Amino acid sequence: MLVILEVFFLFLTALMIVYLVRHYIFTFTVLRRAKIPKADSASTNITYEPTVSILIPARNEEKVIGRLLQRTAELTYPKNKMQLIVVDDASSDGTGQIIDEYSKRYPFIEVLHRDKTEGGKSKTSAMNAGFKQAKGEIILCFDADYYPQKDIVEKLAKPFANSKVGAVQGRVVVLNEPQNIITRLVALERIGGYRVDQEARDSLELIPQFGGTVGGFRRSLLENLGGWDENILAEDTDLTFRVYLAGYRVAYVGDAECYEEAVDNWRAYWTQRYRWARGHMQCCFKHSLNVLKSKNLKAKEKIDGLLLLNVYFMPLIVLVSLVVGVPLIFFESSKLAGILWFSVPISFYSFVGNFAPFFEVGIGAHLDGRRRIQWLIPFLMFTFLYNIPICTKAFIDLVISRILGKNHNVWAKTTHIGNGNSYITNQTICTERLP
Amino acid sequence: MKSIVNCLFLLFLLQLITLCLIASISFISLESTITLFIFDFLFASLTFQLNGTMSRKLGLLAIGNFVGLFWNFVFFNFYSVGAFYFGEFFGAFYTITYPILNLMWIVPFWSLSLSVFPKMQHASALVN
Image (cartoon, rainbow over all chains, first blue to last red; front, side, top):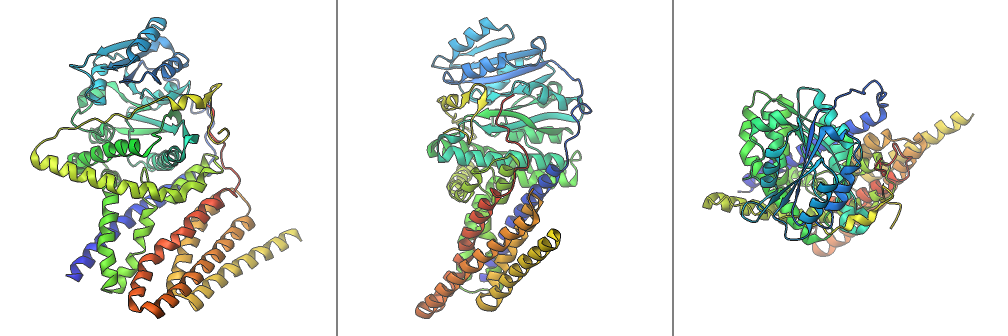
């Protein structure tokens, strides 16, 4: 019995060590890249201005939607090549009226009102409705609580000059970071996830992930893929893999920054992460085999793809390795169990938030020119501990729903209350500088 | 002359780090030496690539090794006393908590030390 447990423990710790090594390689790669001076912008300045349709799903977003629409009016991309479709998804507050006002003022803003019979079901449903109305060669997506850079469309459209690029992803930065400890920890997670993880995956030609917002697709590809899958909660991960399986790649543009309003309480954190975890696990069941069998993916893309698909199982694996490892050490089964035990606590600091280890988050923050936010890295252990029950519940719920044959997904929308508005002053995003 | 002094200082720091490793294996345990090695590996391979003088980097690494050595020394003594009173049971407790408690100095020290290095790039705090 102890031997079986030990072999099982060996398997679990091996998995954790694989993830640790993966993220170490990411961090090392980004550090090496940071030392190389960036190519002269003139030499990389490709003039590529396709027609662009921007989709913004909005449901009860009256506190934030005006801020975004005002900002879109300030975008530097030629307005005659830009179409903005705001999907008022059965809002019960003043969202619809605000969008109507902006639509009257700016001709490139179009509104699609959906009533309660057709709308209010999910973001994917709203996106598909907006997509039907889109005319641009490139389809970009933004969430209603986002605040983009003025030249973000140029930056996001540019990679599509390469015909192999099917999708693009920009960088998400937390707008309301100084609000409280939770928003600061989420900001750290975002830094690790985007500044290091996504950038490394892009430069190593692995699988950078489309994050559902601040990104977009080649229209022809999205049409071939049949738009967003409304049965998947993590529609972004799902589309990422569908893009790769179709023979295209996702390009990550780190300097295309967009500012989001992060969740500011543990309840909202739970709701958001539960949706991500469950959706990600759905994608794992849906795509793992396809990734293995695909002829469009290189071996390294397959490995990274499988690791990416399984990442939300890691908190569960750490939990199980704790349960298995402790009795093994108490029964003194072998010296090996004691040595392997080292990897378990390291994993505590290795799968935090967007599942970036502490050294990855720290280096990301340093490369961003941050001085103090790194001091909060030890506290990321608490967000990881919080992720254990979240991912466990998501897994159990998903297994039960599959056994019962009920694939009913409840889209728990993150509520945005406009807390980020106070951090935009004179077009400057305040992070460490102001309280 | 300045470069010779600098070289001597770097050698001195390297000696300190080596001494910490030898002291850990001689007076504490093999586990503590492994922990210091993990810390040294992470620190040397990642933070040594950041901007800043070598003396600053080695200095921080030496301080880190001292902190680790002290931490492990205290914890090992705690274990010795615990094992004396509670016997073998405490050995398992020590094995389980050992790596967790060691991360409690590695992660904060590593995080704090990043603030000592000069910025590599400017913060992207401006939206155009």
